[in-house]
Image (cartoon, rainbow, N blue to C red):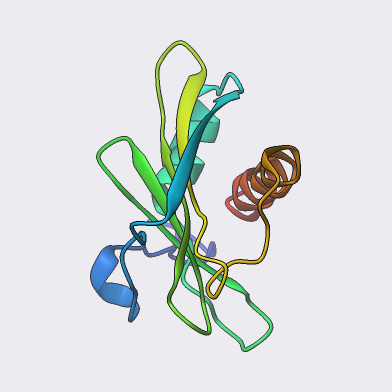
Length: 122
């Protein structure tokens, strides 16, 4: 039997990092983005930071992805994935925790983060 030389990737979970919940000051919006089964599986793995340069800790519970800043543990995005590709995003609006208050900028940041997470799983 041949050994698989691929690095074993651990699926991230809530208990892998010191995190804070989404604050009461938040906003919701819709993110329209269809996902393939392969992309969804990549997102389900989440991400556990390996170095100080890694700025995000992400994990999924059910169909919800949580994205926390790695240094502070603050929850910035919560994405409830929907089969129809119209996902419900909750974004942190506490100005002490997250300085952005523009949904278009949030969409750009979140799409970049999702792209990065999907690519990292390849």
